[in-house]
Image (cartoon, rainbow, N blue to C red; front, side, top):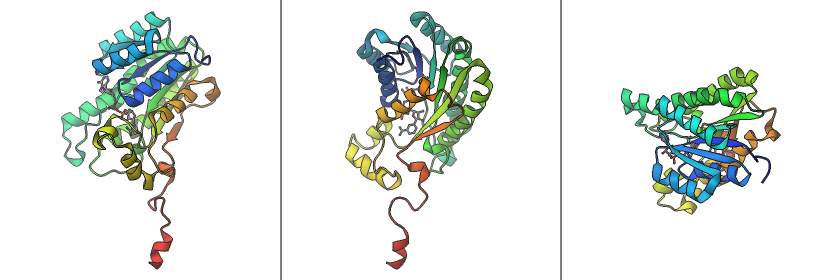
Amino acid sequence: MSEFNNRVALITGGSTLIGAAVAKAFVRSGAKVAILDIDAASGAKLADQLGASALFIETDITSDSQLEAAVAQTAAHFGGLHYLVNLACSYLDEGADSGRADWLKALDINVVSAVMAARTVRPLLAQEEGAVIVNFTSISSQAAQTGRWIYPASKAALKHLTRSMALDFADDGIRVNSVSPGWTWSRVIEEVSGGDRAKADRVAAPFHMLGRLGGAEEVAEVVLFLCSPRASFVTGADYAVDGGYSALGPEQKEPAIPKLAE
Ligand SMILES: NC(=O)c1ccc[n+]([C@@H]2O[C@H](COP(=O)([O-])OP(=O)(O)OC[C@H]3O[C@@H](n4cnc5c(N)ncnc54)[C@H](O)[C@@H]3O)[C@@H](O)[C@H]2O)c1
């Protein structure tokens, strides 16, 4: 408790596991958080748990007017704004079969709304010392994955936008970085694995050097580091929080050369 005293973070898509972990980490470190999400039930429940340090604002980030109202409400409620975490996402993706409507909808949430959120908070962040934006990208931004076209493209776009934002917001004193998680224990993975984390770890093990998937809290720690003064010379960077996924080649963890002798 101290590093983030009297500091305020706005998190888009804060209603599920990873967003909640980021919100909790900020509050534990002394910050106030605004959680913006369309999932009102989970968002309100999380804000209740966090008490006076948290504010849930039901917001569809694809609406400019809702976004502007939520940012203004956050700044008025907590007396300022220092950090934006662009975390909300859509997994809408039918790969090669995706039609125009799906492309436009998912890119609107994953890319365009992140940019609009950054544009909306910019004047407020520019008034503060040590303001930071963190964008959520993914290992999917750099690897082909079967049946997925929209999501990886959207994350690659956001990773590059991080560099553009960092450059053009630098003179406002705003640092901009991204985090690229590997497989993380999250709503989606919990649902698909039937809540079996040990099984999810076993599936993830061959392609994560650390032999398991990540925890939402482990991703949140890196977000907080990037927002902290300890990262004061870090901007335009993408931080892998992926247990070594992106540093591994196609040979994966198992030694491949011995297989030649089998
Ligand atoms: N789950 C993983 O393993 C993983 C891996 C790499 C990166 N990520 C990234 O981490 C972030 C969180 O992922 P997650 O798996 O927790 O996702 P999630 O689907 O559980 O959470 C995303 C949140 O965004 C909200 N949202 C969607 N559309 C919205 C809109 N129009 N307006 C406001 N909120 C909206 C959803 O309600 C949800 O609460 C994403 O950016 C994702 O790309 C996740």
